[in-house]
Image (cartoon, rainbow, N blue to C red; front, top):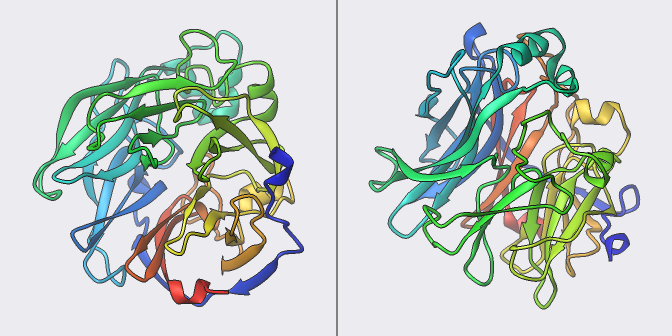
Length: 385
């Protein structure tokens, strides 16, 4: 089955789409020069963009979850506002990573991971970035969990619930499965709940091969051995094909996506296997369009190692059967943007893209060099064959 999942990179039919682009947020100071992990939701006709906002470096102390809104389908945006602030920790402020929003019937849930970076790890981080964290025996982060925050007044005010997902860092906001279950992907650990509001009842499931007591980021980006470490597995995205097992596509270090399957609605998963779907090494998103076709939003250029740094072009690949994504729509192919501020792991023209269908439009959001956040709006009519 894994070999059947392909995007036929280099031979697929490609159509360039003309869309409208706006800047959601532009880094304009040295103390707020890192923006990443963007997602977008629609609440009562208003677009909500959420992302992680930090100082200079990726996922450093003091990073927060912020949001901006648009009432004109992304033409203009409000200034960024804090949704989940950092908190005082044992050795400094915590790091908050945005996990996006889930819109319920009467509530909005926001997900934000929190962890503290140890002084020894922070010294290595400032010196060599995350690569220094793989030193044997080094305790890098602690008190890792994802908190669930709720708004009952349309996003005007927020409060933290008692729900905590220990050792879990979300990758994408929850996806509602055909069964009604909500599934939220992380890196090597994932979560599900049967609470339609996404506020409580979260259960955590790990991929096969994780050691007992494993916490995300507790020893580095992928602190495991065996196949998970060999393939560099992280950052999942799920989608369903009727009558088939639930699929989770996963980032790897092989210029191709991997896939794991679940036959029990996400409660357990198979070992990841490589597919023929090319990838540059970045977050991606899978799902279905209103017309029933499947889509994959990603940067599929497999030319390593520089493609992971460039993260361009941005492509929406479409499939009728969920296996062969051979109809490509080019959303952007600008070169990597030069940075205005220094910082660890800051790169990528179309970083961590995420999409949302709003009425007859496709809204796409991404980071630019992990400094700015931009939004693109396309007509769904242009996605017709």
